Image 1 (cartoon, rainbow, N blue to C red):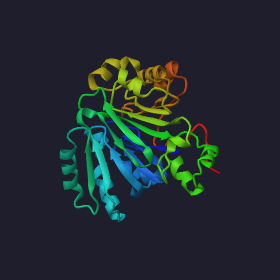
Image 2 (cartoon, rainbow, N blue to C red):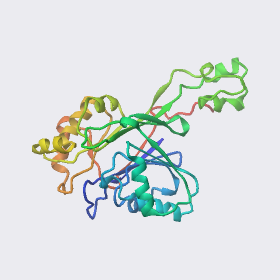
Image 3 (tube, rainbow, N blue to C red):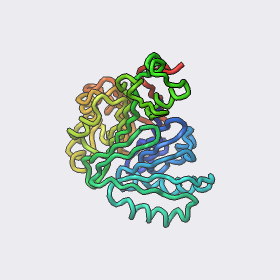
Image 4 (spheres, helix red, strand yellow):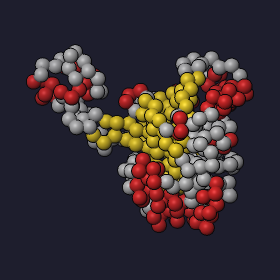
Length: 305
């Protein structure tokens, strides 16, 4: 199960009802944060995301509307008494940015484990078998798009386990994909089942790689800076997308859900852009601060009694 929460859906400057770019994922009581625009920690308090439980923070790029909330967030985590390390990941240039942020935030009682994605590409493994894959955006500066993947092992076969004489106390370990007691998961598991996949794609125009990475994703949260399709040339110039382009890419990729995000401050009403996106992808939804969703595996049944 993965809980998705939008903490900020704006671009360039915050509005009274719209903080700047940030998305929170919570898995098993631990959190991941994608971007940290101005207003992130206020939204986290308002919508119930515990920054104390944050395990890793992924920055797409180093424009201010994606990281100006970071000094305050780190200070607040320190004030909460956090001592465990925090993973910080982003495109090339991360060290210089974090050094500047720390000059503002001051000394922290926890370490920052820095992870740079060379050429905006790479995979960062997370606990529980999950991973975050970075790949390049179509933007004016180096910018990472992120795909979060939570795999799911094949169904556990108790009959095989009993036939092999595997003690019951080892079953859950094997179901989790770990060897135990001289036995291996492949002895008792069927084919891998469909897991969960979430893409965070801003700031970017539509690209063939994004469409491929998003194929059959459970959720695509995508740049929709411009509501009016007449602004497509401006979107190309600045490395963004229109709402209609986001809908077209979602349809091409066959995603299960599309959330629009990263609206220009000039977009005070997303409905016209929403209508344009729905022409291409009827299941599109307008993102807004506080929008939440719980994603679960297709087959929620337990494997082991």
